[in-house]
Image (cartoon, rainbow, N blue to C red):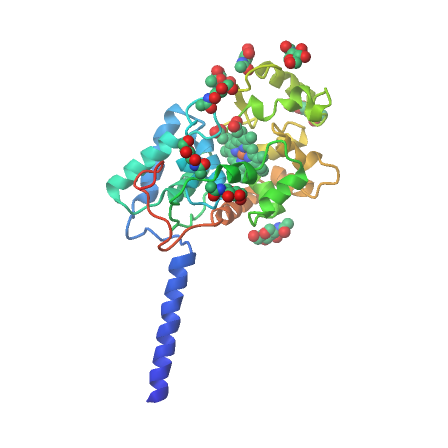
Length: 322
Ligand code: HEM
Ligand SMILES: *[C@@H]1O[C@H](CO)[C@@H](O)[C@H](O)[C@H]1NC(C)=O
Ligand SMILES: *[C@@H]1O[C@H](CO)[C@@H](O)[C@H](O)[C@H]1NC(C)=O
Ligand SMILES: *[C@@H]1O[C@H](CO)[C@@H](O)[C@H](O)[C@H]1NC(C)=O
Ligand SMILES: *[C@@H]1O[C@H](CO)[C@@H](O)[C@H](O)[C@H]1NC(C)=O
Ligand SMILES: *[C@@H]1O[C@H](CO)[C@@H](O)[C@H](O)[C@H]1NC(C)=O
Ligand SMILES: *[C@@H]1O[C@H](CO)[C@@H](O)[C@H](O)[C@H]1NC(C)=O
Ligand SMILES: *[C@@H]1O[C@H](CO)[C@@H](O)[C@H](O)[C@H]1NC(C)=O
Ligand SMILES: *[C@@H]1O[C@H](CO)[C@@H](O)[C@H](O)[C@H]1NC(C)=O
């Protein structure tokens, strides 16, 4: 009798602690399956609608999720300090659409779905709408109670003028390896970048007084038309010069022709002795290989530093704490 009762307690404790661990640390695919069964459809509907007038919106939303995850984890902290969103062709655009999604989701499932999860779902929907891979989005993130620390924003987000070693370190600091770096960089298969993020390559690369020697000379001339030497840097151009709004593997074939837009893109093949060249070639010749790894790496990235269980909150509005 005694031993059965002891066993009963032991089993109960194990089950109990198992449940606590699941709630506290793990995201799951079906997190909202009973509390918000129409979530995916609502997100898809709002983004599809935004696409009709803004073919860049998917790229902007995907970048949002990446930037959020790299600064204090995927906790929507980046949505709180986003005052320069609408102007200057800023990299942080799409907050209005995030808010539209949140409003639509609140109307069907009040106080249930976090903004951090909305960013993760929006990234997947954006890939899918652009012709890219789909994947099961893990859910159950909670939203931060404080805004992203601006020092961490500048420390953690990789710079477009990073070398390959710096890119690897930046990703490694987030638990992402070289495979993830090469696959996730493929997100630059769509969207735009401002001149200010690559203009040094056109006129004065590394203060040499010359253009970047790893930049295709035909592309150089095109880019110089768009980005005059002493311009404001606020013009934008396509990250993928061949298929600007399609999520495909042309990003990798562009790199093979020295047609990567950012230094950080071209570094993946042009760094002497780079161990990333083989992967770039694999992805450029095999789109499925790219899509499969991209999906896996997005899931991995989406797990960075998440808040779960009773941590943080479910924001009622994505750009302010409750
Ligand atoms: C490898 C390091 C990376 C660097 C240095 C980098 C840098 C940049 C820069 C400078 C821009 C242009 C921003 C502007 O004009 O203000 C950009 C755009 C973009 N980035 Fe990255 N990025 C990196 C990785 C990623 C990752 C991992 C993703 C997503 C998985 C991503 C998705 C995007 C997208 C979709 C855009 C276009 C956004 C738009 O059109 O609004 N990037 N990135
Ligand atoms: C836009 O760019 C101008 C000039 O570079 C700068 O002075 C201004 O602060 C920027 N505005 C915002 C909202 O970032
Ligand atoms: C922001 O992050 C930096 C670097 O980790 C840290 O030194 C600083 O104390 C943080 N600031 C706030 C307000 O948390
Ligand atoms: C966020 O922006 C507000 C308003 O500009 C500022 O007071 C606050 O210090 C910022 N917070 C962080 C963490 O940077
Ligand atoms: C990167 O990590 C994944 C698992 O997340 C692993 O399958 C892959 O082999 C790793 N790649 C490298 C280059 O270490
Ligand atoms: C923007 O690009 C156009 C050419 O497409 C150019 O004439 C103009 O000077 C550029 N403006 C800035 C601010 O770079
Ligand atoms: C741009 O500015 C630099 C120095 O400020 C000057 O030397 C150069 O001639 C200018 N270039 C053009 C095309 O105006
Ligand atoms: C944003 O970029 C577009 C395309 O290059 C350009 O026409 C527009 O003037 C830019 N906006 C600002 C505020 O510089
Ligand atoms: C430059 O790009 C063009 C296509 O845009 C390509 O035909 C050419 O081979 C490229 N040059 C180099 C050196 O890769």
